[in-house]
Amino acid sequence: MGIKLDMVGIVVQDMKKSLDFYRVLGLEIPESANIEMHVEVAQDGLRLAFDTVEVAKGVYGSWDEPTGHRIELAFLCDSADALNALYEKLMHHGYVGHREPWDAFWGQRYAIVTDPDGNLISLFA
Image 1 (tube, one colour):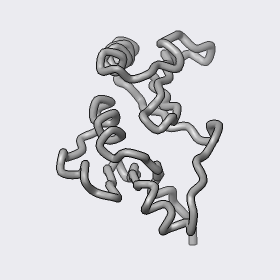
Image 2 (spheres, helix red, strand yellow; image 1 turned 90 degrees about the vertical axis):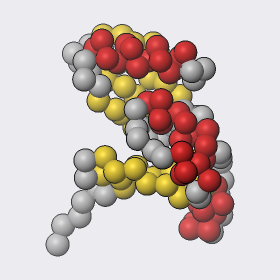
Image 3 (tube, rainbow, N blue to C red; image 1 turned 60 degrees about the horizontal axis):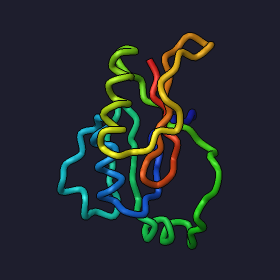
Image 4 (cartoon, one colour; image 1 turned 45 degrees about the horizontal axis):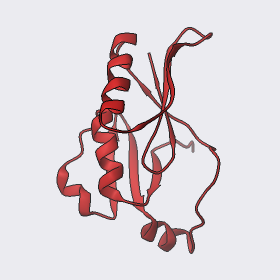
């Protein structure tokens, strides 16, 4: 019997704020999800889930606000130009850039933005 990574979950302070960020990023999430406590978005065989702090407390028994960055979510863009345009779109919507787009030494175009909950989100092409 093997295992398969099936879902990555993000604990959010404000569901609507978080979902709005990921909508601008390009995920298709219905507006009706804004009031839910748990939301899942299918991504080619992997689910990206969003849970409110209240849900996390219920699942884990408690919730301590994390510090530091222990996991990376990295989104593949179609091209360097598409990455640059997406980064500018996110900045135009008032989101925070952590690192502007650059040509990384490993050969990818790369940028890092911060989601509303302080998670670093990588964009690459």
